[in-house]
Image (cartoon, rainbow, N blue to C red; front, side, top):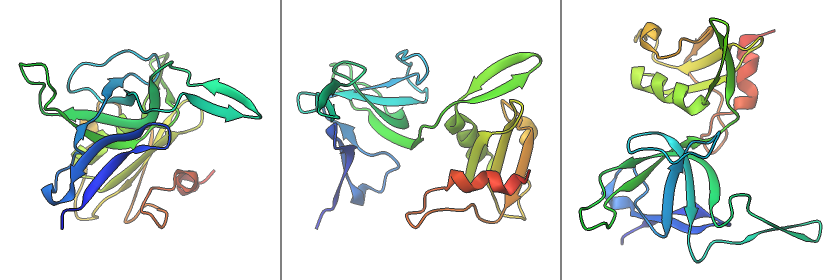
Length: 198
């Protein structure tokens, strides 16, 4: 029996479909139109970049009913999913897409960081992806006080991580055997700040 996994939402309907027996990291080929955009300003991003998954199709919802009034999606026909993703594979010469979508993390508000007198806006999933490439099992980046970057890292105590190679070095780092997670296995960011104390 083939088991198919659907990636989508109530607002978008089906976005991608994947055969779980393929055992791939991606969520499959996309239906309708899917683009990856910069979460802060909506810029269309080049291949290889991480961005917010945005989609439009004939079957997406037109908006929401709130307090008895209809409100369209802010991006017109496009729906912003709130998920960070990247493309895997290439588009074919004939124009049809052979790319498959890899969904990374849920997007969260950007972190404000002060570096050399400059205020930078950093996406948490970019920091967390860099930490995982270093060898962390799980990682959580969050806003510290006074525009600083804090990270909590789940890692094997026997494996030393070289944080000096990160594009942006955190101001405070906590390494623990296991990050607090929900019953579904998702990191509980609301409890991460408690790891740093006052």
